[in-house]
Length: 159
Image 1 (cartoon, rainbow, N blue to C red):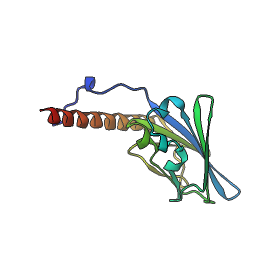
Image 2 (cartoon, one colour):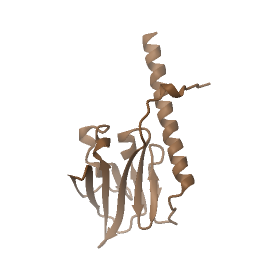
Image 3 (cartoon, rainbow, N blue to C red):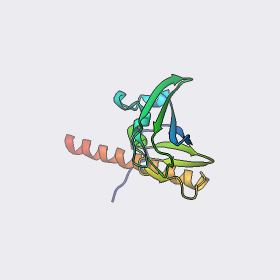
Image 4 (cartoon, rainbow, N blue to C red):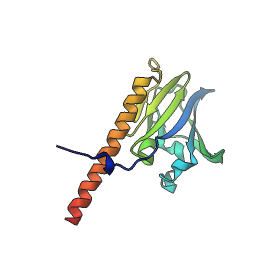
């Protein structure tokens, strides 16, 4: 049985980033915004945020990033005329409890360490309170498990 004391978990405010996916002239464009305070958790070679996204399994063909208003803003173009699926590893590159919110038309998608792939053309699912609560609980559970695993390894190494 795994027992984790809340005192063993390092507190961190909710970690978030956001993006918008849109189609224009037969291309899919992605804009990603991340607060500069979150960049301290990302290795410098991973800071081109759009490289952590795939649309219909495709990588971006063009991407650029810039700093503005305390955020890193990255934009990418995909040679995908009709996006059906988005996959991202961005939350895993930040923190175990990172949430990435993506706007697709009038719908929102939530990505976490455990939710990395979402269909986007079939019946848009609106961002709802139960979905956000589930995502937060999943992120918290992942953080607790990671912290617990690290604690057990350090106890074994020192014992």
